[in-house]
Image 1 (cartoon, rainbow, N blue to C red):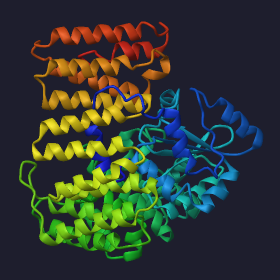
Image 2: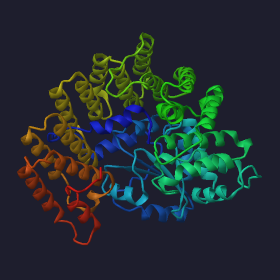
Image 3: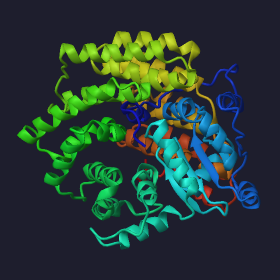
Image 4: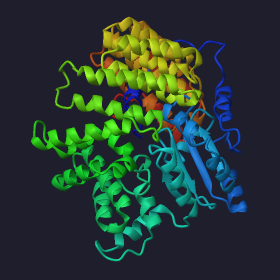
Length: 534
């Protein structure tokens, strides 16, 4: 899911290595602290790779199931905790369903992630009592919109898959048999976290285009959002095509309508450059017109107090991105004094006004990243370092500090912060993700230091629990990515001895798994140099 630009850029910074300090809190303690923020909700916290007992209770009580999949460190997850899960209406409404809190570091969580096809943190899914998936809720929208969609989902008895089939069967421009609520559920479905539950990726854009056309004109909000989602997805899919002229006209109309722009603030702020690049050509009058209109709308959103602090920051971040849209990747970035001042003011405001520690976990890395983007790297460092002692998960902030050091060209400091981040990370899935990321950083910045690379990769492998549940979902991808990067590092055969030692170490872990379990194949294939997975 794309929530705030920094949260998309930072996975590449998942770097660090060094044994976790003995005084570090356990994963269970960290998860308990995170859940305590929403202690009024009777969360069910599974401890194992099965939700059978949950769905058995749901069926017996005739209650739907609300599944939250997240991680303690994840900024957008903390944003949901601070703005949705603490709302009185959510707490009260949770009595009507079984709320399941699935942290990615709990035992069996990654296997459950594979079962329910959830990848990105956070993902929220609503199920019928019998376990049928009703809908996936949009984590990127603001809290009020989230609650509206949740209520629509709870009131619905028809799975979103059936609603989609019914909508596609309707004639364009004809009398719709679907209700306004059904169209709204389709429009606000979390297409970002669908994971091919409803449609193969190749069919998403043409389907959304058709839905936007079929949606009755009286349901303009739903039709607009469906059209915007099609434009965003088309921008990221070279094989997809949309009517760019019609898309430009629709987007300009939205930008000129303040209430409509506010309803789609998440798309306008977090997919700004995708929309511009997908609809216009560099240097064209159409691009100039669209960028001007977007900047005006983003200024309004950045000062809209009805939006969360994270969303207001996102609007300013979008302006920074727009300012560089005509530049090549190799060009040195430049910003106007006014934009730098706006970014500095937005970051300072977020720092001074965010009092909830979970919201701070969401906004401080974003604010610091924003400062770095406009060249205020020292101010970014100062903000992050001041936050470290009080952050929910300071090891996430260390990734931004590592990125800042890299911006300065200080590889030693970048790797040092990466190492500290890994040392402080908590939980098996998180440590595997941070550790494999650190190996990648070492290969990138210190490829000649084979001893350090071997030590880091060996530690990652050494921490793997020889249990089938370990080799699913994010864990599997992290391990495969590390294996592919190590083989690339050894492309000329210079480090074959290191690769062989690591492969032997991993083989020892894999051989402890049941021979017939698919996890064993995933484990043994992780260091296959022919693997293209990442």
